[in-house]
Length: 382
Ligand SMILES: Cc1cc2nc3c(=O)[nH]c(=O)nc-3n(C[C@H](O)[C@H](O)[C@H](O)COP(=O)(O)OP(=O)(O)OC[C@H]3O[C@@H](n4cnc5c(N)ncnc54)[C@H](O)[C@@H]3O)c2cc1C
Image (tube, rainbow, N blue to C red; front, side, top):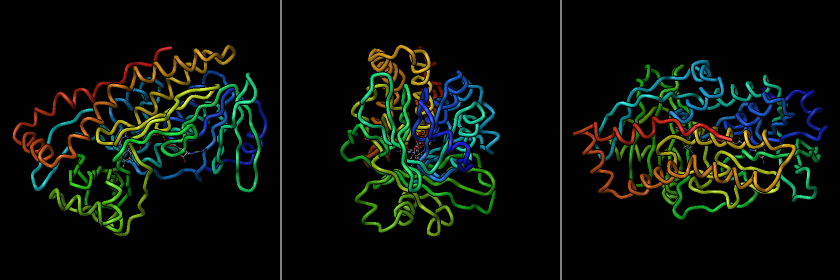
């Protein structure tokens, strides 16, 4: 879906109730929620739409919980999502397999496109190939955004701006954790029908996962050390070496795949909210993808932010921004710290080996973590 000329024409007019920058899961969910509430919403995406994204594409309980809450529970199935029933964790030739319940693998391109369609069906105006930049505050009642599209540029105003620009897209500055890994991802064809399990290989240079997407495709995603990537020479070589080190069969077609990368993964925005602007999803903060919750975190924070925006659009104050910061931390603080702690521990070879060895002998040991991850995030409250 590429923006049509009518949408581009509409995008020049305003002022808007809300401008949402970035049409990933966070931006699309925020735009839809606000459009359904009758707000005038402009959704601005810099890529040509639909776009690919380096991601494992696994929707966990947090993501599925949000989709249930907003009446889009059918979306993963409509996108050809594959229900996953088990996780295989491999390290140095040893493998542990344990059951997982609430996980569905989706192709991000299809899933994100479906979410944006749901937002435009609700009344949001969507333009792609348009880069938005939030301008320094000049008016109390509005926030201005400069939009560049092709050779064209204009300034649009809105009562509130939701920044959902993902990693590296934010403008308020980011604090990047030292030693943060970067993400790599590719979709590869698979001749035989893939099973319903995620395979995760743990190695020295990071970890790599494979998930079945249906339709003869596999999603390959990895979090890797930057220096190891430079030394390996290519994403395919590095990801291949992580699978080999762990003793996992190499997915086919790694060398020919079109790889996508990300900026450093573990980072957070210096400021979550200011002057009628709220940051959501990865733009607000992200931790390495080991627990596969980023899409859920992104959509959840989008709901929290859009509820606050909707309730306070006519009487905005800095209290709304503080409320968002509080609710954001309440919703995600523990989950992000837990994910971060696990990824730091797994950097130690002995911990990796001992964890997989213990889970191989006693898969039930994974239950407490799996149960924690299978719990939806606390329902958004105003
Ligand atoms: C290797 C890897 C594996 C992962 N695996 C999983 C997984 O299995 N499950 C899971 O839940 N999560 C996973 N994640 C995390 C997940 O991909 C992200 O958390 C999620 O995409 C965040 O959504 P978002 O909407 O915040 O940002 P994004 O999906 O990144 O969307 C941001 C959008 O904003 C656009 N944009 C950027 N700047 C601008 C601008 N100035 N103007 C307009 N548009 C702009 C971008 O083009 C992009 O389309 C993984 C991540 C990585 C790197």
